[in-house]
Amino acid sequence: MWRKDHNGEVYAYLVGTDGYGEQLGCGNWTWQPGQWTKVNGVPVLDATGLMFRTVSSLQINSLYFSTFFGGSDSTWVTPQNSPRTSPGSA
Image (tube, rainbow, N blue to C red; front, side, top):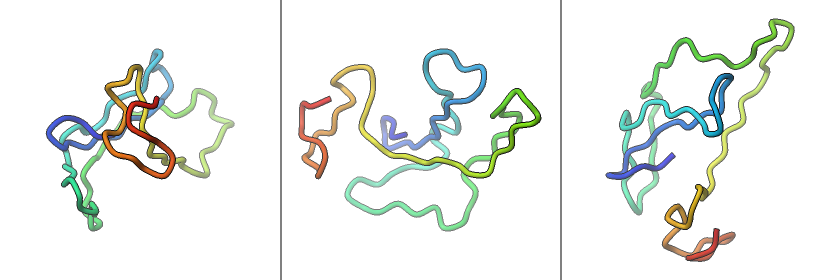
């Protein structure tokens, strides 16, 4: 997730979160506007104790990573046109 002052974070939907996701590692890395961001194989977040399931018979075999513009109101909308969005659209 992109936060103020170009801070990045992982926003995860985990067991036990109510309504919204869990914010992890906010500010552990930053985004530079107008440039591609690379982590270069350096760990920026080491989170332990996360609960992904409550039943031991369920196994995790993949991870879904997604980026999108979204939020609970229009302040989350992109300020620039992109192939799938336009300013002011939610």
